[in-house]
Length: 268
Image (cartoon, rainbow, N blue to C red):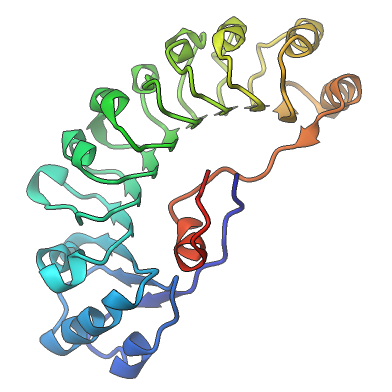
């Protein structure tokens, strides 16, 4: 697992010095929310082939994806309020963050995507169960049915997803890590026992879970790392003392992959 990296971000506009773009180190994230002039686009296209190339786009900034000299080198991308049905996504995309927006996720199946994070939006996540390379998926503020997963997914995080049980996870035979945060609807975690590869777990803001039943259940799982908050500091300390597991590292994010693109280290 990887820790979230500190990533330099350069805001792009027509007054951005061209040398700032051309000389940006690998792993730099370039952000744009409006149309850019030809000089800026040319400087970005000149910088793109040097590796570790990431974009953060909203509104008119999404027009950068229409430029083949740029899109061909984008490996990490963040989109805000985008309609995926109107975009052609970069062919070598490995990491993607979607904040709001909508459209079909089926186009993602053709990409070498490894990390995907979705926060809100009108997206049907069902096609993702077919993805051949997706390893880490983070879902925030989406309906419970969004948390379906395919047999190859290795890490799943839900934030504010109203799950009552974890039955939808039973198909995750390769799932090594699961995080459930801000889920006061969760009443049962019994389905975790059906996940043979599960080794890392986080349960935070899951107030309905019973302390003693949770300790007994987790003690039967072959976990190596845990982060838990199920109802007050005393309860959490008691769980930690009983189970004596490692602390969980931060969840893989599209931003963190920027550093990995410059090192060759695999994210999971």
